[in-house]
Length: 57
Image 1 (tube, rainbow, N blue to C red):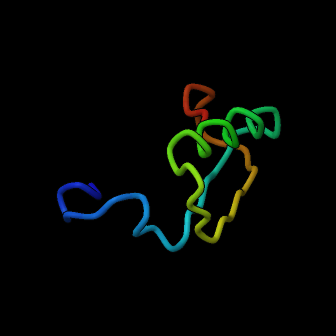
Image 2: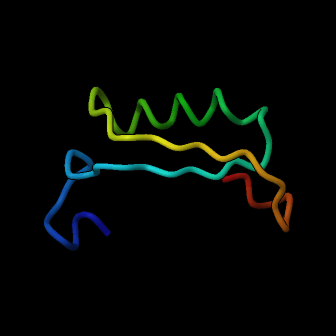
């Protein structure tokens, strides 16, 4: 979606992530670092139950 708007992850000002379980927080941090590199937008992580166990994020 960013590319379609001629934007990159550097244009992100805020990221909100919903995690199915606290056990996914390390994987989430690792993936976020891979995707965002040294860019540090405002971040909110919400750990909550979800409707389907197939939905990890």
